[in-house]
Amino acid sequence: MIQGVCVRAKSVTVVLAGLLLGTAVTGCAGGDGGGRGAELSADALLDEAHKTMNALKTVTIASSTTGSAGSSYSSRQTTDLKGRCTNKITWTEGGSLEQIRIDDTDYVRPDRAYLDRWSGREAAGGKAQDRWIRTPSSNAKPGDGLVDCTWPFTAFGKAEKGDRTEIGGRPAVALRVSDAGDAKDAEGAGGTYTFYVATEGEPYLLEVAYRGSDYRSTTSFSAFDEPLGVRAPAADDVLDAADAG
Image (cartoon, rainbow, N blue to C red; front, side, top):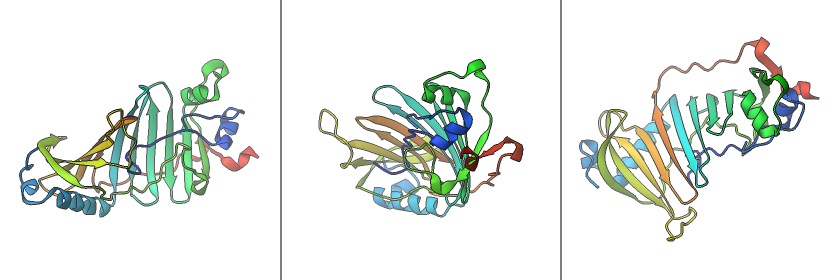
């Protein structure tokens, strides 16, 4: 599958849990398209969109994912596509995890519902959890629920034109790409990505929808090159990971 289209959050670091709970916390830490779409091939449209996205200075990325078992979560990230970003993941079963990354430093804040859920016990009194944990971004590992501020806008497979449509009020063309490398369903079909590319103005990638046998997701892109307001939390609201021991 494409790296970044689906965020698979599974766990939070033991250090973070030790600071906030005193116990280990783990968890699931058709048509031509009109305009530009009528002039270029599907592959050329997708290549142009990826080049445009890779040239951005900032972008907001919102994603929702539903697994085959029915569990789901959503995320919203605002990023400079380099080393500064904010992200929040929210699970429908309860709990959220916030992150601020500023170059070499991560600030991470799980809410009380997240801590209760993944620790397997409910904190006495149910007091709200609003502290941030400061930790080196180099400590982040795949599956720990933290995101990279970069995003892989890269082409793969063979694209085919779909129908004309609108995404957020903007004219767009759908471009379908099948990923033979994805897990096959009962009929032997792999996952399918549909890329929606703007056909008027800049050829932004507006949305990516994935449908596969194990999950489905929708990722949208907006706020192109808008000012980025990423700041560290107030010092009084921050605990240092080094304080864990």
